[in-house]
Image (cartoon, rainbow, N blue to C red; front, side):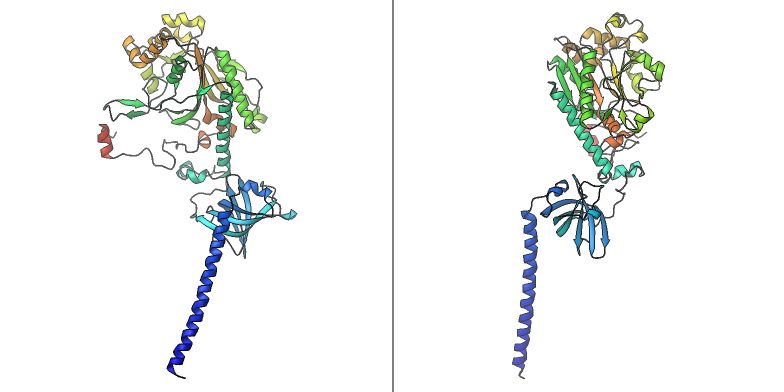
Length: 507
């Protein structure tokens, strides 16, 4: 056999092998492109809609909630915003990790009757997986998500809050909050209220707590304050003639933290012109009852009881109380009630820095300084007499032992507001510096008005049968005032401080 013949035979063999390899590669490419095209041609189906897609091919996208390997068979529970469905792969998905993000192409099959899962909405069907793609593989999780999360420490939960929010309990609470907020908005809009936003950068004024201050870069040495509430702006909107206003403002107060109070919270802020106390209370009661019903909440009373402040203190020892029976507590019934006829002023608590700062005379307000006294006590207010006996038009809404709202009929005349500030020890010059803009506005025709602020976070906390506000807020602060996920408060650069003309002196 000649050398040339040997070379020729080898070339033929190599050519054949190469041809086979090329065919295999081309076939793989064709399968890949077919797979990609099949995914592209399918529109995404949400998990809840698979019940209407039996024997049809669907494209699902979501998270791997659980995974179970049984030899060649791999079962996963795929989760999206609408629910969970079981997906079954033969010789597929073995490498998936829990909480990985995937997309799956498969056929929806009806489960045999003995395999139906009554615990999930899609328990009568499952998806036979034809193909899948890992969109983002998850590492081993730092916290477990298959419990309610209460057993995990607060710091760890809030550090990984974006994971904590994936758990079923937290998803339900956040959706509850969204639906409740939307129901309140709808109730006000159909009553001819206008939703109007007010500024976040404002002036430091007396509202019962320390302000969070923001330095001005353009005016060195001067500061804005973040709003403790939109109190003055909403009264100015009444001066502006809007008559019926509401919004969902973020409010910030530098005060001691506790389970039902944080540095920041969301209010349902409301103001109305040409109303008396009963009209405001009736409107708010109607709105709250409608919103609670819209999210399937349970109310104890069709009409909220109205209790005098003095009677509440005498009977319950506090101005916020729980009217439920033990059985109603177990059933998470909401027992709303109104408290009325509060004292306007109280003696300053010398341990409270904000009260000492606000009450220069030793007297300070019980709720806010913009309230009206009841008509028969106006003369006492103007004369500064019987200060501890002056009754205000303040009204609080309480529920299950918590204050969940507070408001009043407002001072709409400059002489009333001045008289309040004088009782607290302010001079004419100090009054002008603090609320001169309000006094001027009142001089141009401000109508009688009143309003309320409802604590949205507390409402959601109670509706969800939770005991901490942190469970009703997506990204709450820790008990020590640190932000969830992000490491704040934190130091800032020397350049940033210099730009603001600030120096930090450490205590």
